[in-house]
Length: 234
Ligand SMILES: N[C@@H]1[C@@H](O)[C@H](O)[C@@H](COP(=O)(O)O)O[C@@H]1O
Image (cartoon, rainbow, N blue to C red; front, side):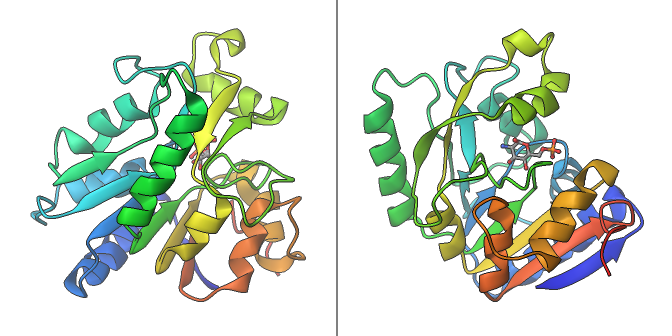
Protein backbone atom coordinates (compact mmCIF):
# COMPACT_ATOMS: atom_id res chain seq x y z
CA UNK A 1 0.00 0.00 0.00
CA UNK A 2 1.27 3.41 -0.86
CA UNK A 3 0.38 6.03 1.77
CA UNK A 4 0.29 9.74 0.97
CA UNK A 5 -0.21 12.07 3.93
CA UNK A 6 -1.77 15.40 3.03
CA UNK A 7 -2.56 18.61 4.93
CA UNK A 8 -6.26 18.60 4.23
CA UNK A 9 -9.11 17.35 2.07
CA UNK A 10 -8.42 19.92 -0.64
CA UNK A 11 -4.85 18.71 -1.10
CA UNK A 12 -6.09 15.10 -0.98
CA UNK A 13 -8.72 15.86 -3.61
CA UNK A 14 -6.10 17.36 -5.92
CA UNK A 15 -3.77 14.37 -5.55
CA UNK A 16 -6.68 11.97 -6.10
CA UNK A 17 -7.69 13.89 -9.20
CA UNK A 18 -4.14 13.71 -10.62
CA UNK A 19 -4.09 9.94 -10.05
CA UNK A 20 -7.42 9.62 -11.84
CA UNK A 21 -6.24 11.79 -14.73
CA UNK A 22 -3.16 9.61 -15.16
CA UNK A 23 -5.35 6.48 -15.10
CA UNK A 24 -7.65 7.96 -17.76
CA UNK A 25 -4.64 8.86 -19.93
CA UNK A 26 -3.67 5.20 -19.60
CA UNK A 27 -7.06 4.02 -20.81
CA UNK A 28 -9.29 3.78 -17.70
CA UNK A 29 -12.90 3.83 -18.87
CA UNK A 30 -14.91 2.61 -15.88
CA UNK A 31 -14.74 4.29 -12.49
CA UNK A 32 -15.95 2.88 -9.20
CA UNK A 33 -17.36 5.78 -7.21
CA UNK A 34 -18.18 6.39 -3.55
CA UNK A 35 -20.38 8.74 -1.56
CA UNK A 36 -19.92 10.34 1.87
CA UNK A 37 -18.17 13.56 2.84
CA UNK A 38 -14.72 12.16 2.00
CA UNK A 39 -14.73 12.35 -1.83
CA UNK A 40 -16.50 15.72 -2.12
CA UNK A 41 -13.32 17.76 -2.79
CA UNK A 42 -12.13 15.11 -5.20
CA UNK A 43 -15.43 15.47 -7.11
CA UNK A 44 -15.03 19.27 -7.06
CA UNK A 45 -11.65 18.86 -8.73
CA UNK A 46 -13.27 16.77 -11.46
CA UNK A 47 -16.07 19.30 -11.96
CA UNK A 48 -13.63 22.20 -12.17
CA UNK A 49 -11.38 20.42 -14.66
CA UNK A 50 -11.74 20.34 -18.40
CA UNK A 51 -11.39 16.55 -18.47
CA UNK A 52 -13.99 14.95 -20.69
CA UNK A 53 -16.06 12.20 -19.06
CA UNK A 54 -18.60 11.68 -21.84
CA UNK A 55 -16.91 8.40 -22.76
CA UNK A 56 -16.71 7.23 -19.15
CA UNK A 57 -18.86 4.81 -17.18
CA UNK A 58 -19.32 4.90 -13.41
CA UNK A 59 -20.44 2.16 -11.05
CA UNK A 60 -21.21 3.26 -7.50
CA UNK A 61 -20.54 1.24 -4.39
CA UNK A 62 -23.86 1.36 -2.63
CA UNK A 63 -27.34 2.74 -1.99
CA UNK A 64 -29.71 2.83 0.95
CA UNK A 65 -32.67 0.46 0.76
CA UNK A 66 -35.96 2.33 0.60
CA UNK A 67 -34.72 5.64 -0.80
CA UNK A 68 -35.27 6.59 -4.42
CA UNK A 69 -33.15 9.00 -6.40
CA UNK A 70 -35.38 11.99 -5.67
CA UNK A 71 -34.80 11.62 -1.92
CA UNK A 72 -32.06 14.07 -0.98
CA UNK A 73 -30.47 11.49 1.34
CA UNK A 74 -30.16 8.84 -1.34
CA UNK A 75 -26.74 8.19 -2.80
CA UNK A 76 -28.16 8.66 -6.30
CA UNK A 77 -29.19 12.19 -5.32
CA UNK A 78 -25.76 12.79 -3.77
CA UNK A 79 -23.96 11.68 -6.93
CA UNK A 80 -26.23 13.74 -9.19
CA UNK A 81 -25.62 16.84 -7.11
CA UNK A 82 -21.90 16.44 -6.44
CA UNK A 83 -20.81 15.13 -9.82
CA UNK A 84 -23.11 13.89 -12.55
CA UNK A 85 -25.16 17.06 -13.11
CA UNK A 86 -21.94 19.02 -13.60
CA UNK A 87 -19.84 16.42 -15.41
CA UNK A 88 -21.79 14.22 -17.80
CA UNK A 89 -20.67 10.61 -18.16
CA UNK A 90 -21.67 8.08 -20.81
CA UNK A 91 -23.57 6.16 -18.13
CA UNK A 92 -23.88 6.07 -14.36
CA UNK A 93 -24.89 2.98 -12.40
CA UNK A 94 -26.04 2.80 -8.77
CA UNK A 95 -28.01 0.05 -7.06
CA UNK A 96 -31.75 0.74 -7.03
CA UNK A 97 -32.71 1.17 -3.38
CA UNK A 98 -36.41 1.10 -4.27
CA UNK A 99 -36.32 -2.19 -6.14
CA UNK A 100 -39.40 -4.27 -5.32
CA UNK A 101 -37.33 -7.46 -5.45
CA UNK A 102 -34.00 -6.89 -3.68
CA UNK A 103 -32.63 -10.33 -4.58
CA UNK A 104 -33.21 -9.60 -8.25
CA UNK A 105 -31.60 -6.17 -7.86
CA UNK A 106 -28.52 -7.74 -6.25
CA UNK A 107 -28.17 -10.13 -9.24
CA UNK A 108 -28.79 -7.28 -11.68
CA UNK A 109 -26.05 -5.17 -10.07
CA UNK A 110 -23.57 -8.06 -10.19
CA UNK A 111 -24.37 -8.34 -13.88
CA UNK A 112 -23.67 -4.62 -14.36
CA UNK A 113 -20.32 -4.97 -12.57
CA UNK A 114 -19.45 -8.04 -14.67
CA UNK A 115 -20.22 -6.11 -17.86
CA UNK A 116 -18.27 -3.03 -16.70
CA UNK A 117 -15.06 -4.17 -14.97
CA UNK A 118 -13.81 -1.34 -12.78
CA UNK A 119 -10.52 0.23 -13.82
CA UNK A 120 -10.19 2.74 -11.00
CA UNK A 121 -12.01 2.72 -7.69
CA UNK A 122 -12.30 5.55 -5.17
CA UNK A 123 -13.08 4.54 -1.59
CA UNK A 124 -13.76 6.19 1.74
CA UNK A 125 -13.61 4.26 5.00
CA UNK A 126 -16.10 3.96 7.84
CA UNK A 127 -15.01 4.49 11.44
CA UNK A 128 -15.35 0.73 11.94
CA UNK A 129 -13.23 0.01 8.87
CA UNK A 130 -16.08 -0.66 6.44
CA UNK A 131 -15.67 -0.02 2.73
CA UNK A 132 -18.78 0.52 0.64
CA UNK A 133 -21.22 -0.87 3.18
CA UNK A 134 -19.22 -4.03 3.82
CA UNK A 135 -19.49 -4.05 7.58
CA UNK A 136 -17.12 -5.93 9.95
CA UNK A 137 -17.64 -9.69 9.65
CA UNK A 138 -18.49 -9.57 5.93
CA UNK A 139 -16.91 -12.51 4.04
CA UNK A 140 -14.18 -11.39 1.65
CA UNK A 141 -15.55 -13.44 -1.26
CA UNK A 142 -18.95 -11.72 -1.22
CA UNK A 143 -20.34 -9.87 -4.25
CA UNK A 144 -23.32 -7.47 -4.21
CA UNK A 145 -25.52 -8.02 -1.16
CA UNK A 146 -28.14 -6.48 1.08
CA UNK A 147 -26.60 -5.28 4.34
CA UNK A 148 -28.07 -4.71 7.79
CA UNK A 149 -26.22 -1.58 8.84
CA UNK A 150 -24.32 -1.61 12.13
CA UNK A 151 -25.54 0.64 14.91
CA UNK A 152 -22.24 2.58 14.79
CA UNK A 153 -22.66 3.18 11.03
CA UNK A 154 -26.24 4.38 11.53
CA UNK A 155 -25.00 6.79 14.21
CA UNK A 156 -22.07 8.01 12.08
CA UNK A 157 -24.33 8.64 9.08
CA UNK A 158 -27.14 10.23 11.13
CA UNK A 159 -25.47 13.62 10.65
CA UNK A 160 -26.83 13.69 7.11
CA UNK A 161 -30.43 13.04 8.23
CA UNK A 162 -32.94 15.04 10.28
CA UNK A 163 -32.80 12.39 13.00
CA UNK A 164 -31.15 9.04 13.64
CA UNK A 165 -34.54 7.36 13.26
CA UNK A 166 -34.61 8.49 9.61
CA UNK A 167 -31.41 6.63 8.68
CA UNK A 168 -32.30 3.53 6.64
CA UNK A 169 -31.40 0.28 8.41
CA UNK A 170 -30.37 -1.52 5.25
CA UNK A 171 -28.31 -0.87 2.15
CA UNK A 172 -27.33 -2.63 -1.06
CA UNK A 173 -23.56 -2.76 -1.35
CA UNK A 174 -21.04 -3.89 -3.88
CA UNK A 175 -19.15 -6.76 -2.21
CA UNK A 176 -15.52 -6.97 -1.17
CA UNK A 177 -14.78 -9.47 -3.96
CA UNK A 178 -15.93 -6.97 -6.60
CA UNK A 179 -14.06 -4.06 -5.02
CA UNK A 180 -10.89 -6.16 -4.95
CA UNK A 181 -11.16 -6.84 -8.70
CA UNK A 182 -10.69 -3.16 -9.55
CA UNK A 183 -7.34 -2.56 -11.28
CA UNK A 184 -6.50 0.46 -9.12
CA UNK A 185 -7.87 1.55 -5.75
CA UNK A 186 -7.49 4.96 -4.12
CA UNK A 187 -8.82 5.18 -0.57
CA UNK A 188 -9.20 8.55 1.12
CA UNK A 189 -9.52 9.17 4.87
CA UNK A 190 -9.82 12.47 6.66
CA UNK A 191 -10.18 13.40 10.32
CA UNK A 192 -9.24 11.89 13.67
CA UNK A 193 -12.43 9.77 13.76
CA UNK A 194 -10.80 7.65 11.02
CA UNK A 195 -7.38 7.28 12.70
CA UNK A 196 -8.06 3.90 14.38
CA UNK A 197 -9.55 2.44 11.20
CA UNK A 198 -6.62 3.73 9.11
CA UNK A 199 -4.08 2.23 11.50
CA UNK A 200 -5.88 -1.13 11.48
CA UNK A 201 -6.21 -1.08 7.70
CA UNK A 202 -2.49 -0.43 7.12
CA UNK A 203 -0.66 -1.86 10.12
CA UNK A 204 -3.09 -4.33 11.66
CA UNK A 205 -3.67 -7.96 10.78
CA UNK A 206 -5.80 -8.77 7.75
CA UNK A 207 -9.15 -9.62 9.29
CA UNK A 208 -12.82 -9.54 8.38
CA UNK A 209 -13.30 -7.60 11.61
CA UNK A 210 -11.81 -4.62 9.78
CA UNK A 211 -12.92 -5.03 6.15
CA UNK A 212 -10.50 -2.42 4.71
CA UNK A 213 -7.52 -4.48 5.96
CA UNK A 214 -8.13 -6.83 3.01
CA UNK A 215 -6.58 -4.11 0.84
CA UNK A 216 -3.16 -5.09 2.26
CA UNK A 217 -3.37 -8.26 0.20
CA UNK A 218 -3.20 -6.61 -3.21
CA UNK A 219 -1.16 -4.19 -5.31
CA UNK A 220 -2.16 -0.85 -6.74
CA UNK A 221 -3.73 0.58 -3.60
CA UNK A 222 -3.01 4.19 -2.67
CA UNK A 223 -4.19 5.64 0.64
CA UNK A 224 -4.55 9.41 0.84
CA UNK A 225 -4.94 10.48 4.48
CA UNK A 226 -4.75 13.80 6.25
CA UNK A 227 -2.48 14.22 9.27
CA UNK A 228 -5.31 13.52 11.72
CA UNK A 229 -6.37 10.28 10.01
CA UNK A 230 -2.71 9.22 9.72
CA UNK A 231 -1.85 10.28 13.29
CA UNK A 232 -1.73 6.74 14.77
CA UNK A 233 0.53 5.31 12.04
CA UNK A 234 4.08 4.32 13.07
N1 LIG B 1 -21.25 3.75 2.53
C1 LIG B 1 -20.51 4.93 2.84
C2 LIG B 1 -19.04 4.67 2.61
O1 LIG B 1 -18.83 4.45 1.23
C3 LIG B 1 -18.22 5.84 3.11
O2 LIG B 1 -16.87 5.63 2.82
C4 LIG B 1 -18.41 5.97 4.60
C5 LIG B 1 -17.63 7.13 5.19
O3 LIG B 1 -18.32 8.33 5.06
P1 LIG B 1 -17.70 9.75 5.19
O4 LIG B 1 -16.86 9.95 3.99
O5 LIG B 1 -18.86 10.70 5.21
O6 LIG B 1 -16.91 9.75 6.45
O7 LIG B 1 -19.78 6.19 4.88
C6 LIG B 1 -20.76 5.43 4.26
O8 LIG B 1 -21.09 4.44 5.17
